[in-house]
Image (cartoon, rainbow, N blue to C red; front, side):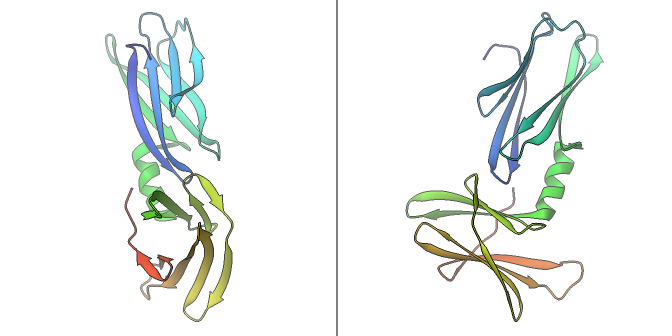
Length: 180
């Protein structure tokens, strides 16, 4: 890493939280993007100091764009977009379409993510094999983490505004959802 670091963002995706770092050499025109410490894009000797750089993040190749705008003189503003939305809009929308739980199983930290639209379950960056079934009060999505039996229960809240409530059970014990 050089001293041209212009922006750092943390982006929570289903496969994990990714760190995006952007270097912008305003004298050399250099642009370098790192995702999780790995260089994914490098451009040297760019004569145009403003513009945008697009790259992929995570296992699902989520589209990310860094916008470089001049604000005054030689000052620049850097904004990150994920799937065409500002990072703030993306994270607000993501909280509506995913549920996330953080737990410790057998001494290991686990980040479990449910994608509500597909009912896909991820744990620490890996998509988990699941089995879904309909039950009297909704659906249950069953899977295992190590030696632990897990289940995501989806039940109607009874209120249109609240929609469906997703609950993670590990060996029959409810785990509190976390907000990312």
